Image 1 (cartoon, rainbow, N blue to C red):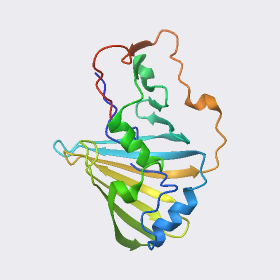
Image 2 (image 1 turned 90 degrees about the vertical axis):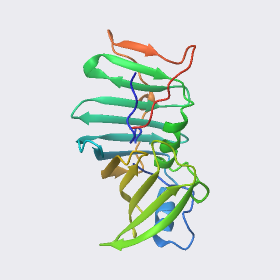
Image 3 (image 1 turned 180 degrees about the vertical axis):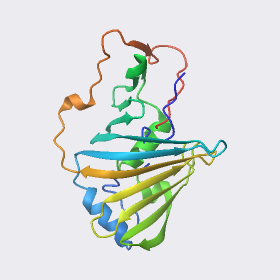
Image 4 (image 1 turned 45 degrees about the vertical axis):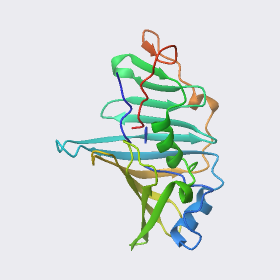
Length: 224
């Protein structure tokens, strides 16, 4: 069975910490909170680097992330191999166009949802994490996040934030096996006008679909 790699999607890395304060006295956290608080729909291009600790293998990817409140995510890898992760309140899709294969999961995927909520600013960081400001370099602040309830896919994370603009520059997620998932955001549009079809997936003609929403235990995918 397919697992959505420890990221977004999933990665997914972290993104929009909108209406939740890291610490009222932290300038970088405050700037980030104010910048993302009003975001309803957004688009961000990314470069992702997945590093496997034991083997030393490094995989680099490029793609685009779309987000809409309250919690719709489209995490689309463009290179080196196309892949789609779509998360909606109705279902989760993981599609592999080159293989003509798609997997459909129920929406209650706790591991992926936990990461996605951090990525999209829906996680109450002051309640879910211990946050430590690691200092500033060249105008960028490093914020270390330590989950109060670690999961296999996320035991530690770090955000690099522009202290003035509040924009998130990059993110790192470390899993239980000390593998790292690094994401650098190359472009961000926090006022993107996205059609509703952005968050709809229709399998292409001839694509095989494995529906794991019906009957029996369902293995939960992890966000890439």
